[in-house]
Image 1: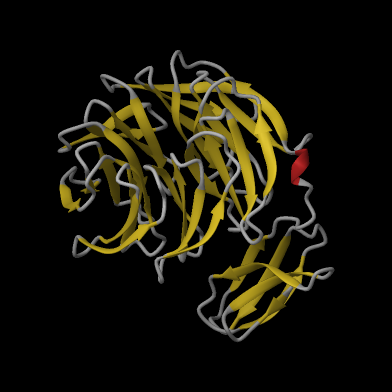
Image 2: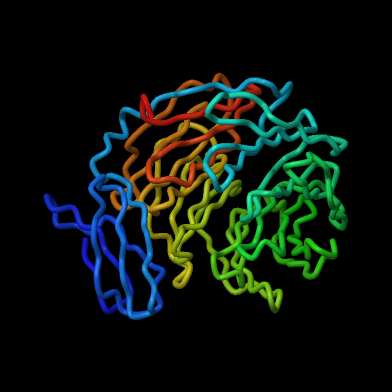
Length: 361
C-alpha cells in the first residue's frame, strides 16, 4: 500500500508488481497510510486535514469458488431488476408480477411488498439514503417509494411508452429514466416535474446510469449505441459505437471514467468515456448479455445473460474468472453488494432471486 502527492493511495500485488486498486477521495496530498491487522482496511492521512478509512478487498480470492448461497422465492412472474441497499443487508426486486419486493439477505425472507403499478415493473434503483427506491414500469410511469412504510410517495408521469430503465443521481434529488418512446427524462424528485428530456436515440432506450459527478448520464439503446449526455444542457456529448446488435444494459465504474455495456450481440464492452474508445470486449456468453454490474473496487464486472448464467470478468485481463450457474431461465438483473468482498444478487425469468458469494461468507 502506498500514498502519494497525487492525492491517491495505491494497492500493489507484490508477486506481480502490479497496481490492483487506486483509492481516490482525498483533495490534498496523502501523507501517511497504515493497514489494519485484518488486512481488509486501511487508514490514510492527508494535507486536506482529514483521515479516511478504506475497505480493501483481498486480492488473492479464488473467484472460481463463488457459489449460490440462497434462493429467494416469492414473485409470481419474471424478476426483471434488482438493487442492493447501501447497508448491504437488503435487496429490492422488480417483477413482471407488477410488484417490488424488499428482501432480508441474511434470512432470505421478503420483508415488504410494494404494490401500485398497473403492469410489469421493469426496473428499480436505490436512493443514496437507502430510505427510498424508484421503479419504472410498462404502465409508462415511475414511482418513488418510502421503504419504511411501503407507500408510494410520488408518481412521475410524462413518458408516452413503457419505462424500461431508471437511475438515481448521487445527490438523491433527481432521477433519470429511459423509455420505449426513445427518450430519456430527468425528474426532480421533490416536485415530481420533468426538468429535461434527452432526445437522440432512434430506438428504445433500455439502460441508463448517472455518473458520480452528477452532471452526466449515459444511456444504451436498441439502436446499437451508447450516448453520454450533459444533463445541464440536454446535449448528447458523445456517441459510442461498436456493438453489432442492440445494447440492453450499462454500468458505470466508480471512477466515472469508464462504463461497461451489455449487448444482444452476446458481448460486453468496456469504454473510455473521455476518448469514446472501446478498451475491452468481453466474450463468453452464448446468448444475449442482458445487463452488467461493476464491483466497488472497479476491478471486476459481473454480467447476466439469456444463457441462464452470470459471468465474473477480470477487467484488466478481459478474462472470465467465474461462471455462475443455477438459474433455470434467462437472467435479467444483477447487482453487486457494496462491501469488501464479492457478493452478487441476480434476478431471473424463473421468478427467483439468487444470492451468490464465497461459501461460509
